[in-house]
Length: 211
Image (tube, rainbow, N blue to C red; front, side, top):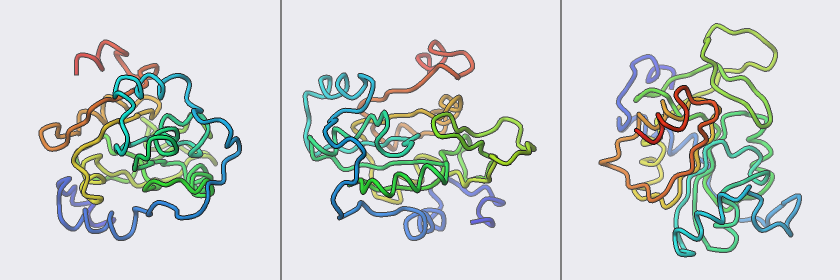
């Protein structure tokens, strides 16, 4: 992976896709859910219900949630998995949070990585925090909560699991949302609906909507 990072390989380079598929993506759990609040069907803060309604309560869809946190707290996708029989992909860069995701036994693919802000894979510094972890703008930062994380282009990860259609993409990465979206080749992947946090994005809502 270090070699491919250094070479800044194209997002659909077969070597990159193969590495993600065989060494980074983890399959959905076949164990019973291990949720803190199993009685709460929709832990999102309104987003999931809005999306569910707009997609006409579709069953059997596919979601991607980047910024998966622990796989349950404020999850925008758990309800689709539990009530609508969706498959999906959970992306979480913080290694501590990712361990919590795995304990929930979600019925979705998972990957401990960040979405690249470039059209190629790269390793970047990441500030760990339960709910506000993020890629650092200053890549020479120091601190006990700073770790190096592998970042992959969104399209590379989708290609590794043979997905070209996403019904719902939830993106919450504390400021890098616009940069991530700019890497997506929308001619190659069809995304039906997105919810994107814009609070920390330079230019905010206007810049996102313009894109």
